[in-house]
Amino acid sequence: AQRVTQPEKLLSVFKGAPVELKCNYSYSGSPELFWYVQYSRQRLQLLLRHISRESIKGFTADLNKGETSFHLKKPFAQEEDSAMYYCAPTLRNTGFQKLVFGTGTRLLVSP
Amino acid sequence: EAGVTQSPTHLIKTRGQQVTLRCSPISGHTSVYWYQQALGLGLQFLLWYDEGEERNRGNFPPRFSGRQFPNYSSELNVNALELEDSALYLCASRGKRNTIYFGEGSWLTVV
Image (cartoon, each protein chain N blue to C red):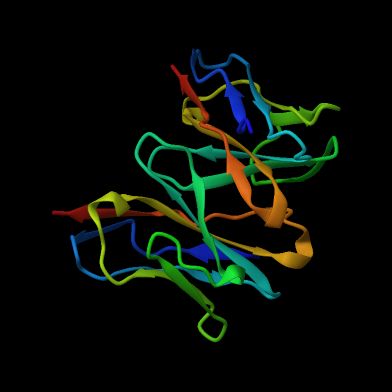
Protein backbone atom coordinates (compact mmCIF):
# COMPACT_ATOMS: atom_id res chain seq x y z
CA ALA A 1 0.00 0.00 0.00
CA GLN A 2 1.19 3.48 -0.72
CA ARG A 3 2.31 5.35 2.34
CA VAL A 4 3.90 8.69 3.07
CA THR A 5 5.64 9.60 6.30
CA GLN A 6 6.49 13.00 7.65
CA PRO A 7 8.31 12.13 10.87
CA GLU A 8 8.25 15.58 12.45
CA LYS A 9 4.99 17.07 13.63
CA LEU A 10 6.69 20.30 14.59
CA LEU A 11 9.90 21.87 13.42
CA SER A 12 11.00 25.00 15.20
CA VAL A 13 13.93 27.08 13.91
CA PHE A 14 15.25 30.60 14.16
CA LYS A 15 15.12 33.06 11.31
CA GLY A 16 18.07 32.58 9.00
CA ALA A 17 18.63 28.96 9.96
CA PRO A 18 18.48 26.16 7.37
CA VAL A 19 15.32 24.13 7.21
CA GLU A 20 14.70 20.56 6.11
CA LEU A 21 11.24 19.04 6.28
CA LYS A 22 11.43 15.31 5.82
CA CYS A 23 9.17 13.17 3.69
CA ASN A 24 9.55 9.45 3.01
CA TYR A 25 7.27 7.44 0.82
CA SER A 26 6.70 3.79 0.04
CA TYR A 27 5.49 3.18 -3.47
CA SER A 28 6.09 0.36 -5.87
CA GLY A 29 5.73 2.46 -8.96
CA SER A 30 7.01 5.76 -10.21
CA PRO A 31 5.64 8.57 -8.08
CA GLU A 32 5.04 12.18 -8.81
CA LEU A 33 5.65 14.21 -5.70
CA PHE A 34 4.25 17.46 -4.44
CA TRP A 35 4.64 19.71 -1.44
CA TYR A 36 1.59 21.64 -0.30
CA VAL A 37 1.58 24.47 2.22
CA GLN A 38 -1.09 25.99 4.40
CA TYR A 39 -0.36 29.43 5.83
CA SER A 40 -2.40 30.73 8.72
CA ARG A 41 -5.98 31.54 7.67
CA GLN A 42 -5.31 30.54 4.06
CA ARG A 43 -6.34 27.52 2.09
CA LEU A 44 -4.03 24.64 1.34
CA GLN A 45 -2.05 25.37 -1.81
CA LEU A 46 0.64 23.84 -3.98
CA LEU A 47 4.17 24.84 -3.08
CA LEU A 48 6.17 22.85 -5.57
CA ARG A 49 6.29 19.63 -7.59
CA HIS A 50 9.39 17.55 -8.08
CA ILE A 51 8.92 17.07 -11.78
CA SER A 52 9.37 20.78 -12.38
CA ARG A 53 12.66 20.94 -10.50
CA GLU A 54 11.64 24.40 -9.41
CA SER A 55 12.49 26.61 -6.48
CA ILE A 56 9.55 28.37 -4.93
CA LYS A 57 10.00 30.97 -2.21
CA GLY A 58 13.53 29.65 -1.78
CA PHE A 59 12.36 26.09 -1.17
CA THR A 60 13.63 23.13 -3.17
CA ALA A 61 12.89 19.44 -2.95
CA ASP A 62 14.93 16.62 -4.38
CA LEU A 63 13.54 13.24 -5.13
CA ASN A 64 15.86 10.52 -3.86
CA LYS A 65 14.57 7.30 -5.35
CA GLY A 66 17.15 5.22 -3.52
CA GLU A 67 16.04 6.48 -0.15
CA THR A 68 12.44 7.01 -1.32
CA SER A 69 12.56 10.50 0.11
CA PHE A 70 11.42 13.92 -1.01
CA HIS A 71 12.69 16.30 1.62
CA LEU A 72 11.87 20.01 1.42
CA LYS A 73 14.77 22.36 2.03
CA LYS A 74 15.48 26.03 2.40
CA PRO A 75 18.90 27.42 3.26
CA PHE A 76 17.68 30.45 5.24
CA ALA A 77 14.27 30.33 6.89
CA GLN A 78 12.09 33.43 7.10
CA GLU A 79 9.33 34.17 9.59
CA GLU A 80 6.77 34.15 6.79
CA ASP A 81 7.66 30.51 6.10
CA SER A 82 5.82 29.54 9.28
CA ALA A 83 3.05 27.25 8.09
CA MET A 84 1.85 23.68 7.85
CA TYR A 85 3.59 21.67 5.14
CA TYR A 86 2.24 18.49 3.56
CA CYS A 87 4.07 16.05 1.37
CA ALA A 88 1.92 14.34 -1.26
CA PRO A 89 3.30 11.60 -3.43
CA THR A 90 1.13 9.87 -5.93
CA LEU A 91 1.58 7.27 -8.61
CA ARG A 92 1.34 8.57 -12.14
CA ASN A 93 -0.08 5.34 -13.44
CA THR A 94 -2.97 5.32 -10.98
CA GLY A 95 -4.37 8.44 -12.50
CA PHE A 96 -4.38 10.18 -9.16
CA GLN A 97 -6.94 7.78 -7.83
CA LYS A 98 -6.05 8.44 -4.27
CA LEU A 99 -3.86 11.44 -3.74
CA VAL A 100 -2.37 10.67 -0.34
CA PHE A 101 -1.02 13.34 1.93
CA GLY A 102 1.41 12.99 4.77
CA THR A 103 0.36 13.95 8.27
CA GLY A 104 2.04 17.31 7.88
CA THR A 105 4.84 19.19 9.58
CA ARG A 106 4.26 22.51 11.27
CA LEU A 107 7.20 24.82 10.67
CA LEU A 108 7.64 27.61 13.17
CA VAL A 109 10.26 30.23 12.39
CA SER A 110 11.09 32.47 15.30
CA PRO A 111 12.73 35.89 15.03
CA GLU B 1 -10.84 32.56 -12.09
CA ALA B 2 -12.96 31.60 -9.14
CA GLY B 3 -11.43 29.03 -6.87
CA VAL B 4 -12.98 25.94 -5.37
CA THR B 5 -15.95 26.99 -3.29
CA GLN B 6 -17.49 25.09 -0.41
CA SER B 7 -20.60 25.55 1.66
CA PRO B 8 -21.49 25.89 4.41
CA THR B 9 -18.34 27.23 6.02
CA HIS B 10 -19.35 26.25 9.53
CA LEU B 11 -22.09 24.11 10.94
CA ILE B 12 -23.06 22.39 14.15
CA LYS B 13 -24.97 19.14 14.19
CA THR B 14 -26.20 16.77 16.83
CA ARG B 15 -25.02 13.20 17.09
CA GLY B 16 -27.15 10.94 14.93
CA GLN B 17 -28.13 13.65 12.47
CA GLN B 18 -27.22 13.81 8.82
CA VAL B 19 -25.23 16.49 7.02
CA THR B 20 -24.66 17.50 3.41
CA LEU B 21 -21.63 19.50 2.36
CA ARG B 22 -21.32 21.10 -1.05
CA CYS B 23 -18.44 21.84 -3.35
CA SER B 24 -18.05 23.64 -6.64
CA PRO B 25 -14.81 22.94 -8.47
CA ILE B 26 -12.92 25.40 -10.57
CA SER B 27 -14.57 25.84 -13.94
CA GLY B 28 -13.35 23.18 -16.34
CA HIS B 29 -12.15 20.79 -13.65
CA THR B 30 -13.88 17.43 -13.75
CA SER B 31 -12.20 15.68 -10.81
CA VAL B 32 -13.28 16.41 -7.26
CA TYR B 33 -11.67 15.08 -4.11
CA TRP B 34 -12.95 15.11 -0.55
CA TYR B 35 -10.70 15.02 2.49
CA GLN B 36 -11.29 15.01 6.22
CA GLN B 37 -8.89 16.96 8.41
CA ALA B 38 -9.55 16.18 12.03
CA LEU B 39 -7.80 18.08 14.78
CA GLY B 40 -4.27 16.81 15.21
CA LEU B 41 -4.51 14.52 12.23
CA GLY B 42 -3.45 14.97 8.66
CA LEU B 43 -5.55 14.97 5.56
CA GLN B 44 -7.50 11.76 5.27
CA PHE B 45 -8.70 10.88 1.78
CA LEU B 46 -12.44 10.34 1.64
CA LEU B 47 -13.69 10.20 -1.93
CA TRP B 48 -12.70 10.89 -5.51
CA TYR B 49 -15.20 11.74 -8.24
CA ASP B 50 -14.48 12.17 -11.88
CA GLU B 51 -16.90 12.74 -14.75
CA GLY B 52 -19.83 12.06 -12.47
CA GLU B 53 -18.57 8.71 -11.20
CA GLU B 54 -17.13 7.68 -7.86
CA ARG B 55 -13.64 6.47 -8.76
CA ASN B 56 -12.22 5.64 -5.37
CA ARG B 57 -12.90 5.99 -1.69
CA GLY B 58 -10.78 5.99 1.42
CA ASN B 59 -11.09 3.91 4.56
CA PHE B 60 -14.28 5.43 5.84
CA PRO B 61 -17.56 3.70 6.74
CA PRO B 62 -20.43 3.63 4.24
CA ARG B 63 -22.27 6.38 6.09
CA PHE B 64 -19.85 8.69 4.29
CA SER B 65 -21.10 9.02 0.74
CA GLY B 66 -21.43 11.56 -1.98
CA ARG B 67 -22.10 12.28 -5.58
CA GLN B 68 -21.03 14.44 -8.45
CA PHE B 69 -23.48 16.30 -10.61
CA PRO B 70 -23.38 16.86 -14.38
CA ASN B 71 -21.91 20.33 -13.79
CA TYR B 72 -19.11 18.61 -11.79
CA SER B 73 -20.15 20.09 -8.48
CA SER B 74 -20.23 17.58 -5.67
CA GLU B 75 -21.90 16.76 -2.39
CA LEU B 76 -20.57 14.89 0.59
CA ASN B 77 -23.17 13.26 2.81
CA VAL B 78 -22.52 11.94 6.26
CA ASN B 79 -25.27 9.96 7.97
CA ALA B 80 -25.65 9.04 11.63
CA LEU B 81 -23.13 11.61 12.73
CA GLU B 82 -20.74 10.68 15.49
CA LEU B 83 -18.72 12.98 17.71
CA GLU B 84 -15.49 11.95 16.00
CA ASP B 85 -16.84 13.21 12.69
CA SER B 86 -16.09 16.70 13.92
CA ALA B 87 -13.48 17.98 11.50
CA LEU B 88 -12.67 20.27 8.63
CA TYR B 89 -13.91 18.79 5.37
CA LEU B 90 -11.91 19.89 2.39
CA CYS B 91 -12.89 19.67 -1.23
CA ALA B 92 -10.36 19.92 -4.02
CA SER B 93 -10.38 19.82 -7.79
CA ARG B 94 -7.62 18.84 -10.15
CA GLY B 95 -6.35 21.09 -12.88
CA LYS B 96 -3.55 21.24 -15.39
CA ARG B 97 -0.27 19.50 -14.56
CA ASN B 98 -2.20 17.54 -11.95
CA THR B 99 -2.22 20.46 -9.57
CA ILE B 100 -4.79 20.11 -6.82
CA TYR B 101 -6.72 23.23 -5.80
CA PHE B 102 -8.38 23.26 -2.43
CA GLY B 103 -11.42 25.01 -1.10
CA GLU B 104 -11.44 26.71 2.28
CA GLY B 105 -13.34 23.85 3.80
CA SER B 106 -16.45 23.25 5.85
CA TRP B 107 -16.02 23.09 9.60
CA LEU B 108 -18.34 20.49 11.06
CA THR B 109 -18.89 20.24 14.79
CA VAL B 110 -20.91 17.33 16.13
CA VAL B 111 -22.25 17.74 19.64
